[in-house]
Every structure is written in C-alpha cells, then in structure tokens.
Amino acid sequence: MMLLIVVQPANAHISMCCGKCGGNMPLNIPGAGSTKALAYQTRCGACHGLPHPHRHTFAHWGHLLALMEVRIKGCGMDPLNADDRDAILAYLKNNARSD
Ligand code: HEC
Image (cartoon, rainbow, N blue to C red):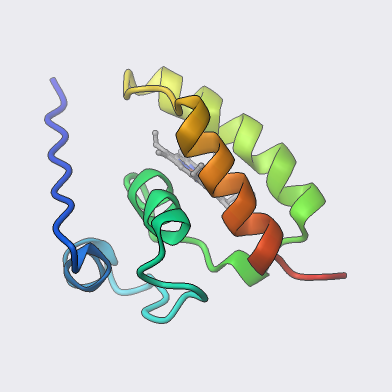
C-alpha cells in the first residue's frame, strides 16, 4: 500500500525542496512560490526529482504530461483534476524551453 502525504504550508516550495529533491531537484525553478509552480511541484515532483521546465519545449511537455497521467493512474494516485492540469500547463507554457 502506498501512503501519500501532501503538506502544503505557505512556504511549501521551501520545505519541498529540502524534503523531496533526492539531490536533483532544481532549487530555483522560475516562478517558485506561485500557485501554478506549486501545482507543478506538488504533482510532478512526487515520484521523481522535479524536472526543470527548461528541459523541454511546450509541445514536448504536452506529450510528457499525457504519459505522466498514465503513470499517475498506474500508481493509483489521484488523477490530475482540471485545475491541476490547467495550472501545470500554464506553468509549463510560460517556462518551457522556446526552441
Ligand atoms: C506516479 C508517479 C509519477 C508522477 C506523479 C509523475 N511522473 Fe514523471 N515519470 C514517472 C516515471 C515512472 C518515469 C520514467 C519514464 C517512464 O516510465 O515513462 C517518469 C519520467 C519523467 C520524465 C523523463 C522522461 C524522459 O523521457 O526524459 C519527465 C520529464 C517527467 N517524468 C515529467 C513529469 C511531469 C511534468 C509530471 C507532472 C505532471 C510527472 N512527471 C509526474 C512517474 C511519475
């Protein structure tokens, strides 16, 4: 059985950097602390280190997001709801690599 604890205090972006990075989480992602960045950190850093948004173009992120939704389902985690997906897509659109 998997126990998932999500703590989201106002300074979650700071505590999550210390608790979940496994050594490879970017400490300074763009927009850290915004609602959109928090959605990205919370949902996309749960299974692996948080990928830096510059790693891919927005088009590529769209494909990856669909694949990650399959992974999330496969693990029995709560699926991304519309708000999560919108926030994550908006975050990646603003911060993805441009070429
Ligand atoms: C349920 C666990 C889980 C969650 C939550 C998750 N991922 Fe993943 N992710 C994986 C696994 C497992 C892999 C390894 C590759 C694979 O099996 O697809 C991976 C790989 C990746 C990779 C590397 C892919 C590559 O080929 O370079 C990226 C980027 C990524 N995830 C982004 C995300 C994003 C963005 C989110 C949030 C929407 C997210 N992940 C949420 C499980 C997860």
